Length: 109
Image 1 (cartoon, rainbow, N blue to C red):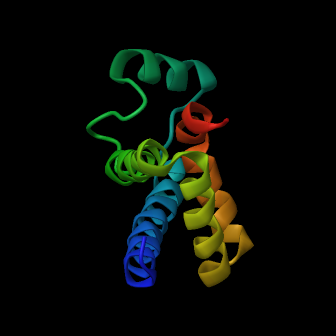
Image 2: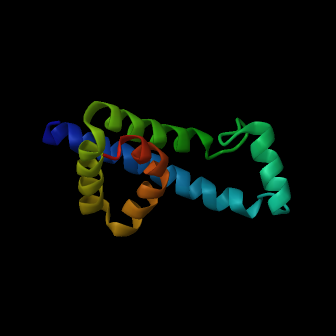
């Protein structure tokens, strides 16, 4: 991956992550009344319900992680994550890690 490609990718990741975090904050205020309601919603609509504002950005972030894993394994995921952390800081990088956890499990050696 060239430096330019990496820069473009981490900027795209940051836009998606920023959108997700902003929408998540807003949707938490209007979240389910109880844990049972939340679980019922997941069972009924899945993890990415069409009416959930964060679904598109969460799905896109996971797809990027899965694609990086498929193309270059855990090494490439770690390279992109390190570049993201260097540019945007540890706090945002930790939020990215949370979104990529399930993708990373597939490619962990």
